[in-house]
Length: 140
Image (tube, one colour):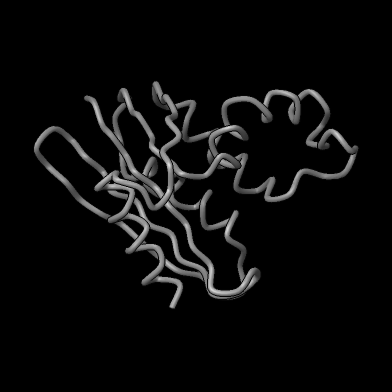
């Protein structure tokens, strides 16, 4: 199976009320999921979106995840390798923030063949704009 997933997170205040959303495209089919949390951060919501979307896909699949968060894309494709080697310490020797969610995201990614694409926020990408609206609505 092949999927395209668009994800976004939003926060009203940082920390504050947060929302996350994902649009899952499977050929002609399109579905969306979203949720919210009180007292959270934008980065946590950006991470929740792909975690929850990957959770929905039960069989090993080829998945491309589109995010406008460099934090998520760079974290899961580059930084996480060093964090694991350094016992979840960042380059400044402090504990990695949001480790709980990074571990969940990494575990879900291991179940699939996932590639990550960064997209410019608030630009001409239809699905990125839709998922942004959904995440923002959940943060209100």
